[in-house]
Length: 410
Image (cartoon, rainbow, N blue to C red; front, top):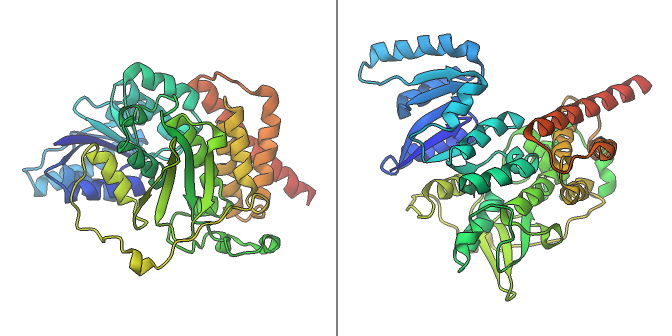
C-alpha cells in the first residue's frame, strides 16, 4: 500500500488522483490533502478518503471547514477527522507529512513551489504536475533533488511518455534520477503537439482570432488558460524547458512535432537510431496512475487503444512564424537562470489579459518577448527561490504595465 499526499486536491490533477485512489483502494491510501477554497468538494474528499491531515491555503477558512466536518462526524461517528492546518506553513507541513510515500503536486503556479520544495527536502518522491517546479525554479530544485535523493515522476502525458519509454532501457535507473544530468543513450526527444485551436487556420487569419476561437480545442475540453497555451504552442515550449531539466538533454535535441490525433504522446530516439513511442487515448489518468504505481503497472478496465479505429496517424513540422511562442521558450531555456521564470510569468499574465479581452491574441507573444528583453539586463544565472519569486512578480507587473500603457495610447 502506497501512502500519498495530494497538493491541490480540488483541482483537475487532484480530483483525478483521488478517483484513481478510490478505484484502487488496495494499492493507495490518501494521508494528506491540501486545497484552496472549494470546501464542499474538499469535505466530500475527506469523507471518502479520511486523510490524516488537511491543509487550507486560506487559513481563515479553517473554522468553516471545521464546522462542516463536525456535521459529518455527527452523522457518521465512525469517521476519524483529520488534523486541520492552514496558510503557507500548513501547506508545507502537509507536503512533507511523515507517513506519505509520494506527493502529487497539483497546485498551479508559484504557489506550488514552496510546498513542492518542502516535499523534496523531506525526501519524498513526487508525481510532478506543477510546471513551475522545473520551468521557473529548475536552478533551485535540481540541487535540492541531488541532496535529498527524491525522485521526480512526471505526471503530464508528454514527459510521462518519455519516462515510460526510457524504463525499458538498461539505463532506466539513471533515467529516473532527474538530477539535470544527461540520460545515457538518449539522443533526441520529440514532443508531440495537437496544434491547438488554430492548427487548420492560415497564419494571416489569426488577426481575426477571438477568445472564443482560442479556447475551442479541436480534440478535448480543458481549462481556458491551458487551451490558449495550446493555441499559441507555448504549452509545448514550456514542456521543452521541463524536458531539458527532467532528462538532462540539450535544447538542440528536443523537437516539437504536430500530431493532430494526439495518440502518440511523445517519442525518444536512442543512440543506435531506434525510436520508442508511448501510445494511448488522450487520458490524464494514465500518466497519473503510472506515477502512483511506478515501478509497477496496474490492470485497469479503461478503454483499450485500437489503431484500426483511429485509421491513420499524421505528423508535421510546426510553423515558427505562426507559433512564435515556441522560439521564445527555446530562447529563454537556453539563456536559463531567471529567464524561464520571466517567460512563464509573462505568458500567464498575457494570457489572462487576453482572456479579459484587453489585448489581441497576436499580442501575447509580443508582450512575452518585451518582458524577456527587458529582463536581460537583470538576468541572474544562479538565483535563489526568493529571487525567482521576485522576478515572477516583476514579469507579471511588467506585462500589466505595458497593457495599461497601450490602453492609454489607444
